[in-house]
Image 1: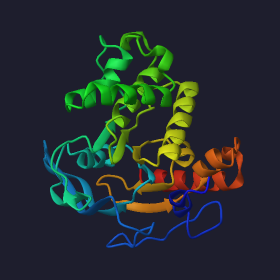
Image 2 (image 1 turned 90 degrees about the vertical axis):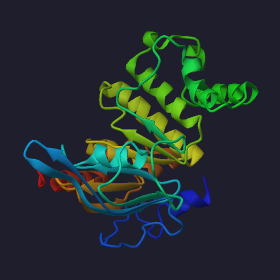
Image 3 (image 1 turned 30 degrees about the horizontal axis):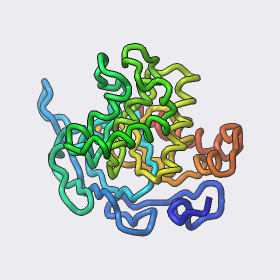
Image 4 (image 1 turned 90 degrees about the horizontal axis):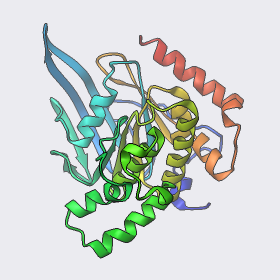
Length: 289
């Protein structure tokens, strides 16, 4: 593939991994161009039994179109809280989050969300679940029905289209959830540890599917995970948060996902480069606990 956006994800270095040293107070963007989401000086505090508790502190970074960002950090560092702010489920205590220059207030279909436990309608068919979003938005049936078939094909569920959700495995349910989010054509797909409850083999299969969908569609993805290897195998960029309260302590570009989908490298996790960055990230996260 020679798509310009795919090349830009990994500029300016030709090495397998390009590490960026970032100043987190007003840092320069890793990828040149207009940002999709800007996160500026974001704090999030809530009231606990002993008083105010700060979950996030001075979060500053931009998200650019077509990036696959994975967020890592120790338990309780605010990863999911940050995703909820981007989704519009909650508002920051201080600072701002903007999509296309407009402040995010509440939820809308421009930001699709995939959770660890998909909130699907168990008594409906796979096809009906995937069609739910556009149908509720008033999209004409003749327009959304072809899209349903297209996205069922993308997630390899065409032959299961008429199955009820309760008849599916965990991995298949997650694929339905991904299709249901993508059919709305959101500007960004927010994924909150979506594969954490899956067994190892199913997880690897759905990771492969997600990576391929991202690469083929150029959709922007913001992905929360606690798994360092998962982040390295999926991301074009990894952001690491500190222990509570969460602050950005590392922001790097990685190239393993490109190696897998473009160069068909199947043993990338056994490479010296992969091992080096796996150990670097593990040390960084473990030092926070």
